[in-house]
Picture 1 (cartoon, rainbow, N blue to C red):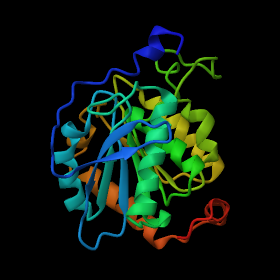
Picture 2 (cartoon, rainbow, N blue to C red):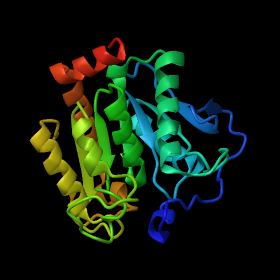
Picture 3 (cartoon, rainbow, N blue to C red):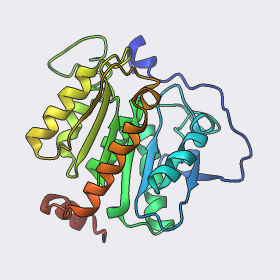
Length: 262
């Protein structure tokens, strides 16, 4: 990727999971093999397609998402990145995008979940594949927790994208057609809150913004705990908004171009 900053994006922790009975395997378009979990909730309408942060892997988050599935009454599908945990290959930006595409394909083609019931949910670095997917496939909504404008813009507040920058969310989010819900803490020490604010402002201009949830005093790694019950209430409110709001013409056109039925 050209610079030490970009290389620091990918620092996978050691795998924290093994032969879990709920673990299964996906093959990406780059012929890498990645593990995934599917937490199914009886009679759930929405399925959250979760993309985790840089310092996490499936074993570290699976217990939390079993709880989230219960609280929100949703299915949760979470996958591993290439080069992380028990996956094959080396972590790269293009590989991360191929990973979420493989997860979406499995949800739609194997589990038969309609696109209109799939909501990508990305945390930190996971916001990048979530945005990428929403630009390439129809999804009902997108949840972005602690998103970055781009990697280079974390240490430098640039007004334009430099060559070699990665996960340039600001350049891609304009291609999203569904409602975008952004969550960010005001004391985020890793990705400053202005990143979420800039992305939200872009969504407002594009007509795809849902009310942002700025959590006063919350940091990067403990936002859910610091927000408390309000965190789950705001997520539930967003999902209810998606259920009762008609699919926009622009989103339906994206689905029609992809040849996917709601």
